[in-house]
Image (cartoon, rainbow, N blue to C red; front, side):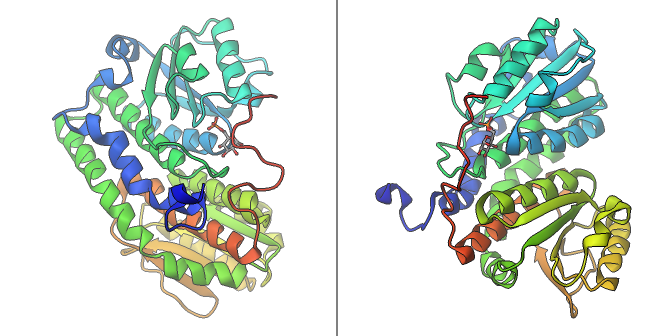
Length: 369
Ligand code: G6P
């Protein structure tokens, strides 16, 4: 194991830093063409994807957070109704099947018991079309799905998923654009802009990784806290959820994520100086609303840690610390904002001295129920 780690202390740290390459590898064949081809999802993808009416995404854990981001993208870019659900819920509840829905499963391992059972359940209900986004070729999910897209993150060893998640997001973004093209919702000009944004992505992530020293300071200042609150809005709400999950998984700090607009409906009651509040605040259409949410936190003595971008016009002041991400991400902003949250939980765990790659009670792949 030591040899494989190279200069890194843990696989998780290595895997965080491998993301520019993992994303470039995942996109390599896709971007070698001058337009996005539906057949990246399989030979029959064009005819199958042209006929679907809705998208239903099923996954567990971190992969479920990718599903939640995709819901924002697919409805916004492709104009198709999309929902996301955790596999262990879907497989056991009564649901209304739609044979024209596309069932999408997302999984790093392709062997998660609940996700596999959920796919089987969907088929049993009469769902005819399935697609999996998976990191392991020849896995059970790949074998059992009609269409597939293989992320090329490479082997992921740290139990807490990092590079698999960001490559899943890229694959789901490709799915949203492909569905949008097939419905004439994405013009040629927009397609080219999306492709350009994808080309620039690995480099942008490389820039964001350079923020690590700043993130370490934050991790040092709240590693001794018992609780943390993560806030985001819109497509960044699932990223807040992923940030909270990472922190729980490896540092054992209790963390919760809320869509920032829900703050006043409960969690605000918990905010005091012992509760760090981590906010994802890119300069999108929701920034002004988010800023007023953040003022509510400040007014109650809460310590704010804000990930903003260059244009977000939020600055550090007593009780408010800001880390600025370079550039604007548009639809890909959730991918960019994932990186500092991964680093934050990694360094908080280092402070606490936990077993980062093998957190207590957790398994890399949950193959039994
Ligand atoms: C376990 C892992 C998580 C992972 C989840 C789903 O809980 O610890 O990191 O997100 O399983 O795994 P999958 O392989 O289906 O993505």
